[in-house]
Length: 152
Picture (tube, rainbow, N blue to C red):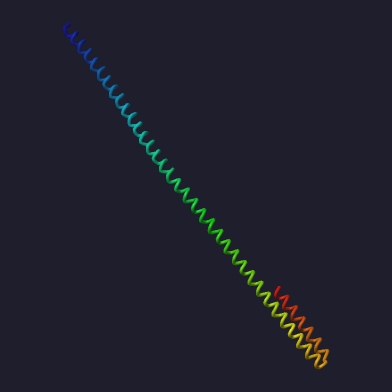
């Protein structure tokens, strides 16, 4: 009988020891879970700070990109307007030159025709050859008509 209380006592001690180990295990498990939660929140905080930093950087660079886009658009518009103005000026100059050349050619043709007609009339009247005068006048008229048609 003396053995039984000892066994009983040892059994209780074992049970108590086992329960304590289990409690210690539970405490360490809870502690580890808390550490994991703490690590997760630390990682989350770090990720949030990085995201905010990137957003701030994006906002700064986004403003710079907008400024660059506006500058490029303004430069392109100015270049197009200047090119259009230059093209219009060139067209105006070409038209003026062509008009002046046509006017000069018309004046020269008219002067030549008048001179030829006067010379032919003077020669014809002096020699009284009517047929020659008619032929020369017809030729001069044909030449003037052809030249005017070519200029158009």
